[in-house]
Image (cartoon, rainbow, N blue to C red):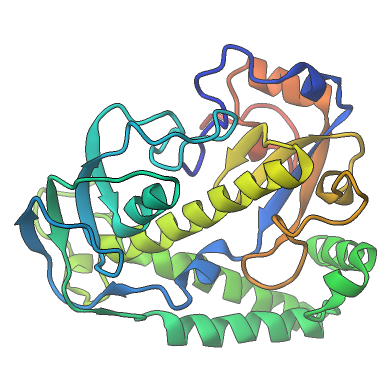
Length: 318
């Protein structure tokens, strides 16, 4: 669901209320994969194949199960398929996805499983150290941990300055390195063959003890589930649903061009579903565009979340 449409089954991508909104505003999750890795139960042994296993949420693995009957908000993408459409039959899901289906009211009966019976919070030390490095660097750039809670306007201004490259060059370079480490380390767990001359033979990445596609999937799926859970709560708190999603960015129709225009609840307080803040897992302002530009992107079957930051024409990879 990294580039899924929020409403793949709807003939009209926008409601009348959304079409009438003058702006679309994007919010991005801070280092979402890093946040997902903390205390996450990950595999420490090889896979064991089992038929008709009893689902265990504490057992990392892949489960063949039918989740097509799981009801989710039709204005949100399904968290169980890459494109956000509803599942149509049995498919392989990680432990994280099956556990979330149970949270949504399902009673899944797995048909098969590739399960890891030894497990632990493998990435937790990595998460703690990198998280602290991120927070320390942001504080050095003028964004302390509690700034968004005490002064959300100042937080947004400081984050905008950092995005514009304002600040100590050394600290900005460290911040970039931390972000690349948080994202790239997860990607390395499923590194594929490289080069145009690849032949169907075993490649070097497979020999690394950290090459583990299941571990990568568990981290990514945790980030997806966390996002879906927060968007459900966001809809309940504010009545707003995203009109576009790409990876960690969600775009909403808004009456104004700022983050506070979509995070404010009807009673005038800020929602805690998508919470502003510098910590990994909290959100920052990604960008805004006039709604007429968003409508044009949707009409071209493009994902507005890809362009909310920079605008411009539809990219070649849409």
